[in-house]
Amino acid sequence: MNAAVEMLQTKFADEVVEVVEFRGETQITVKPGRIKDICLALRDDPETSFKYLSAIAGMDYLPQSPRFGVVYHLYSHKKKNRVALKTLLKDDVAPAIDSVVSVWSTANWHEREAYDLLGIRFKGHPDLRRILMPANWVGHPLRKDYPLKGM
Amino acid sequence: MDITQPMPRTETMLLNLGPQHPSTHGVLRVLLELDGELIVSADPDIGYLHRGIEKLCEYRTLHKCMPLMNRLDYLAGEQNNFGFCLAVEKLLGVEVPKRAQYIRVMIAEFTRIASHLFWLGTHGHDLGAMTPLFYAFREREKIMDLCEMVSGARMFPLYFRIGGLAADLPEGFMRAAGDFVKSFPRRWKDYDTLLTQNEIWKERTVGVGVMNAEEALDWGWSGPMARGSGVDWDLRRDNPYSSYEEFDFEVPLGKNGDTYDRYLVRMQEMLQANRIVEQALKKIEETEPGDIKAKDPKVSLPPKDKVYTDIAALINHFLIIQDGIRPPQGEVYQCIEAPKGEMGFYLVSDGGPQAFRLKIRGPSFVVLAATDKLCRGRLLSDLIAVIGTMDIVLADVDR
Image (cartoon, each protein chain N blue to C red):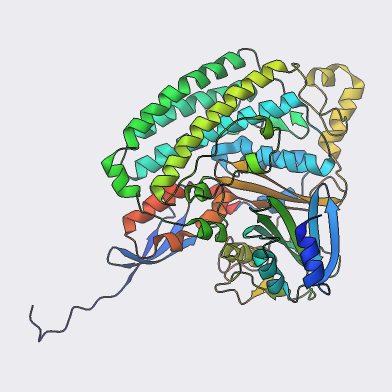
């Protein structure tokens, strides 16, 4: 059992929605409200020590609702293990979640990318601009209702 | 100086470095704010090479994604397919035969050497050392030839397949690879002699682009970039995949986290990669020739000669190519130690033949984000050293 699961279930019992074990990987789904506190705890708790953020993946689960989600992939050099932290955003029209740039500096560009390609807003991000698409681009290409061609 | 006169007015200047500039290693634009020759801020503008690979992968079967994967970090084409294949195989729960695993390791390490050689040549060239480029490309050319032997293509061999390999090693390959392995340490000394103790080289690299271990983790650095700062972490050793646990190699580390230490780390990594290839060649010889594909007919393509002569194989071939492999519903994150760092694939499947979502975590993208931190307050010429030491490939940054 991943130490992160135990830690979150004791400290953030109300936030944990689901824990999935698949192919030896652990994925914890949490509510989006206190994501920053959860990330801070995962980083600073000596039992988990997730000092390294691999990536942030913005998700679009259309036609499901809640439609948007964010998945954080964390790695602990101390324990040499990984955990995926998944959260589903409540608002299907203007999805938003707290930024974790203050937890891991590397989140900066990952969050900009999720904003650019999926239109997820990260509250408290120091510099939330488009990153891959041109600044004047309209729409968010990785959304499921965005056509592959013909724009 | 006449003190009755007002001081000359100074202001900062905005300067575009790129997008067409030889030392940006592709189409990268850095918007610089300069105070004389000092960098006040550096803002990399990326996306010129954005091809929407993640989007495209949602519309094609998993096998058809593989040519796109080759074109992520194109200097180490087969490494990307390595990670992608491992991710799909993990999702499917397929076991690849040992021989295929060893051959994959060998090709991956050859690719690592080729990628590091390219970095060495261009990095040296950027900083005014013209000669190493020619020496480095001499050996890189030989690796390209080896790639050509196994698949016919050089930059993008596309030799790996989901479940194994496209074909077994051709005749004469083992000898050619063995020759390379034997001669490489001697060739390596050529580059070492040219640069390691070179005063000008040290002047340009020592103390430039410094990052300590803690900051490196905070900025998500991996691979040689993190090891240059002394982070003792190698995915091949710490979370082994494809039988890496059976290989004996060291993980070279730097101390100061500057451009020079990262140079030393990458140089040593080439020798270690060569050692791994040497062991892999021995292991390949101990395995049964032809055992290069997983036994699952729903995953592995049938042998080509069977496709032309056997109706069942032909149907099977069509099913896999046209209809695609259908992995179970679920999501996996698989990462590998690519030459530039952690190359990760987050693959989400809804049970259909296409990926529901494929998120690619490229090492170059992450490293480039720290440009401003590395260059602020330094000279403009240091930016060139920093971009060189990052070893970025813009195709991997922009996807």
